[in-house]
Length: 128
Image (tube, rainbow, N blue to C red; front, side):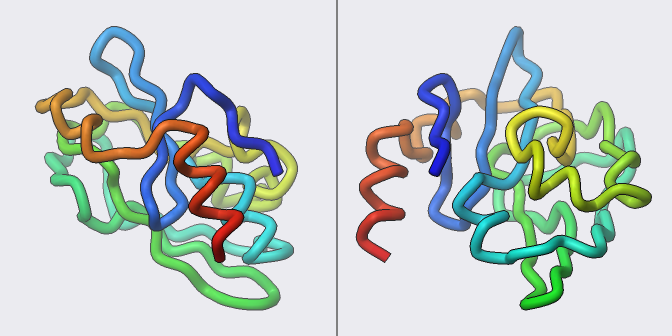
């Protein structure tokens, strides 16, 4: 299971990487593996929407289950990875690169303090 050290994680299996106040958000390798083959992604947001941590970002459906993805941070939506609507399998093959879900201008970087680092997330996944 890949758990890149430069990312932050939440217990609902989303990851976030913040560079210059812009957060890129996706689902973890653990999440995509648990879901199995992803067949559908439906976004609950559009560019310029204001969102809060915990708000719905997307619904992901696989051959095995459906899962709701929520925001780990608050802010303004800058970009949505619409490529995933046509190629949802990128979430399985590239969860940390091409399979990102959204980019957000973070409104409160202190929210990152509520998230886990890679070691804590890895330990959390091992306990499940």
